[in-house]
Image (tube, rainbow, N blue to C red):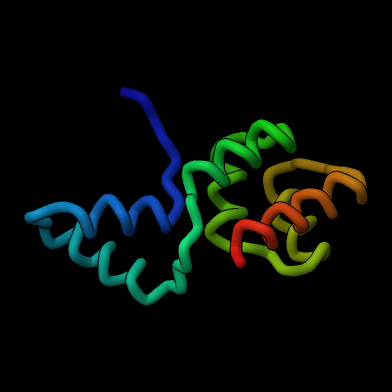
Length: 102
């Protein structure tokens, strides 16, 4: 079984496109509908973050879901995964997230 991490954006698109959903899927869809999603291409963003900044898929997904707006928040998220980036890389990640969220 292949494990794939999905962002909230991907969960929303997957569940909302299904013709029939079970009760658990319905609860999950209800939750992600309440979260501000915007027009982000989550799959592309996940791939870009992983490749450009050498991040694991699960870290990329977390950054997409949380969209940190400050250096401090980004550093806190990265450090929770044991990742330390220099200031230039942190700013690069922030700039990328800002560019895809607008």
